[in-house]
Length: 219
Length: 337
Image (tube, rainbow over all chains, first blue to last red; front, side, top):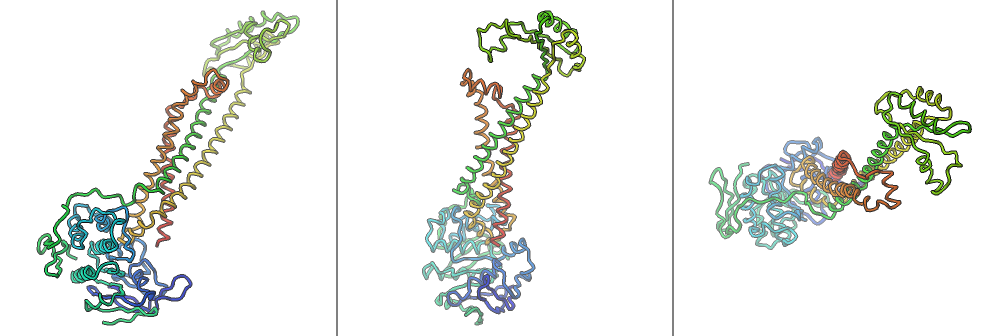
């Protein structure tokens, strides 16, 4: 599903922060991406989400060489990827429900066709009573859950999550992890970038460890 | 991937049931349904009210108002000038100057008689000695003894509109009847009027062009500001897989609406101004300023076609706003990519 070959990344004329990354993300797989702060986890997630282009090497996503893709093709590929960012990126003028339903709206689906699905997911992540609330009045944990719900609502083939349990209590963290696991069981490849050793210890999965710009894989 | 509803929790385990296998979801366990699944009015993707959006409406409204005032004034001057020209062009003035040894009254009567017989002339109005003298009053004042002054006699002839009056023949005839008579068809004055009107129109169009250029520049900057404020929305739309065209359509619609709103406000205020200008002009009638304006611009009222032109201009400025926004928008999207 995802193949990196000798991929390097640098910002501007700065040093190379990711070096010679060569790995594959198989379909239906589950992995944690970890490493110290500043190791390049977020940059690697951005490469996977196609919001950054590598300065060298080959990135192949869903069978497409990314360097050959046009903007429209990239937008189409992004519809197959869900992403949860550290800063949530919820739209403040939209309710929680509308934020979570946004991927369906962008696909051009009728509101009636996804309403139940969105409401069920919101209830499941514990936001059943916050559906009509605007993000500025949500707590950090609620925003986190809304961002996760938005990323998974369209059942992406690849889910990228950057510190998805960073703002929630351990109980909710476990519950969100179960959501990711369940999503993985239903066919989505999942990559969770995290520092949280406790979280990683809860589920036996492949670990991708970034250290000094290089990637070490522990199956 | 098979679509299904989300999810059920039983004893701490999660299962994601699928509509096609198990029917629609769902046992929510402790998560009791709190909100009925009802139709919702979705918020617009680009928020309607924002400080940057209001600033853009204000900029467009002001620029449309200025452009409308310029266009309206140009149209008024142009219409008045055309009216003067057509009025003046349909008249001829014959002056019979007094010279020693000739009877001025007899010469004037003979000229008037000869002109009446001329085809193409529909009306002759000889001015009496008193009327001719009255024409000089603005320069010489009243109460003067005009008998001692060589005041020429004036005959005004109204020419058939569209007729083919032979001016050379008329001049020859008039000179034959009264050697001191001369015919003035106001050509020189009309030419001066025409060049003045042309210069006014040229200046008006120049100002209008400057206003439109200023509109494009100010709208581009205002749009850039509005886009900067909306950049998080563009980024989120990218994250959820929206293509540039989808994003551009949402924003273009938004900016076109803001442009139209500004255009309607600015153009509407200008139209109201022109609509009330007739009443305002009437308040000043009788005053020197009011009389000068009336002489220059007639009734100071726009024709219906003038209002149509102003409305079209407001739509044009809204379209310019959308176009300037489009350029800025795609530049922003390229930056984000």
